[in-house]
Length: 616
Image 1 (spheres, rainbow, N blue to C red):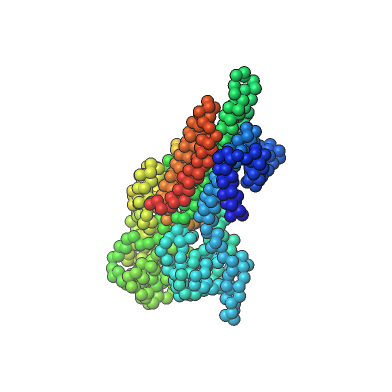
Image 2: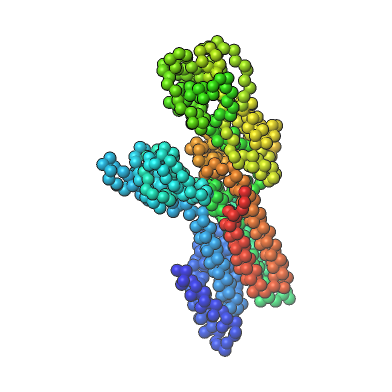
């Protein structure tokens, strides 16, 4: 189809040149040659123009081009009539190419949609089936070079995955047995097996594809403005051109052909194609660029909001911090190795976050568990055991005080405090805290450089929130602690009143109300809850805060690009319209101005596809 169009355009250009040379041919022969070329090029355009006019009662840019060519035919200027259609179709060809390229960029992830899952049966045989039919608990095999079809837990010893399409990370990701395997990643090494942990509809790749497919549904304000503008713009232009055309029939002394020519110029240059196409294309390219860095935006309206943000509110746990406890301070009053041996013996069989952090601390120091018996756990408080001579206790302050009647100093720590005691003597105090993300300090600094005010809104206690704020160099006046979900919402609404447009970044179920009610909700997609991801407008696939900075910078450049196109197009068109109305511009200048602007603005819009290279 595209090759046929190229042939038609090539032949029509030759005919247009021959008509301009004014060869010694009869007008009837010229018209027949012209009509064949004209109709072969424009029959679809003419049909769409009048179909839209009759059925939808709306004039579009195709109607403008059709009326302009009819006027040129009336003036017996056949070369100009043909030129209008030729250059209009050339502009459409550029548009189709630009759309195809930007669409390819933003939907490249669709190719990762797995078509088959290789299920390992009980007898060791392999059967292939659709990923959506695979049940939780099924063992699936992934061959080298294949896309992981579902989310699960690695059974094999290790695997190397290419996660670039899912989270924008270029480095291969090495995982070991027991770690999570995410759908959409590519197996870069040997064959491995994993056990499915989520249905396909809840998997990472299914959610990601849904975000991509929905991303173009929400229009930005400039896009919506252009769409509304085009709806009433065309009738106004046609009316004004008609007034120019009938002017010589009303006012004596005006040259009829001259004023009809001015009306044609007015119609051609006023075609809104460049405006209607370039602005949405800028935002569409911006969506593609942002998706390349592992951030999914659910509509171009949120690109505009990101570009104009003045404040960002953040949750603490899982957003600014890793959501993983670690030992921050170990105060021991006796043999440290022996105390840690007690700790590991009592905590090694628990999956509580505090127990996990304590066992990891012991492992890092090469400590082995000692032998303890009579182990008893009091859920949420502490655990005790017997080493043959002494009773060993590990727990929080209330547990230790209740068990041993010890007077403990009032601790003002930012995180949990665990006490280790033997009989009635205190052996050690272990202070834990949530680890701050490595990029959090740079993130807060980058927000300040962009002129965006950061705020922390968390349900944690004031001491814990303030400790994190101090580490990331966040102004203590911008910290809101001990907030319930409804209080988070109230705080964000207050900030929204102060700054007009505000974003909220979170990851938990309790963040969902705030994410859905803020101007733009940003969710951590890797470890965030499904509800938070669903309620958000932007999803950071690998939870990297610096990707948000990069997305904001891309949004700013995209929005600026769209505004540049609007100013350029309206400015040039207004100038040529004025020249045409006063008789200082001919139809060729109008064609050049219309098609030239269309090509320039589309090429300019396509620059947004390269914005992914912007540094955070």
